[in-house]
Image (cartoon, rainbow, N blue to C red; front, side):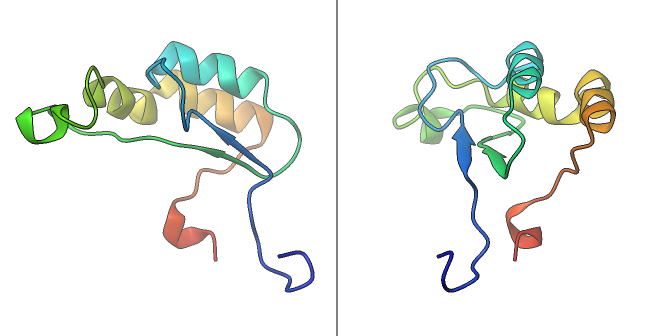
Length: 91
């Protein structure tokens, strides 16, 4: 990827974590991020219905949405100089 000048993330967070990406977890993760290209995985939503439960047992989609919309998280991102982007923005 380097030889092809493709952008990629050096670190991925919460890909296989048993913790939910709630506000407190995100704030702790942001405080420990290495100074590089990082990616935090989220699966936000407004409900966790039966369709999702089979493959994402115990997932707290509403708490992840809350973390993404959190004013504390937004302020922390600003304070440490991180810009939020989505998958479509990474090209």
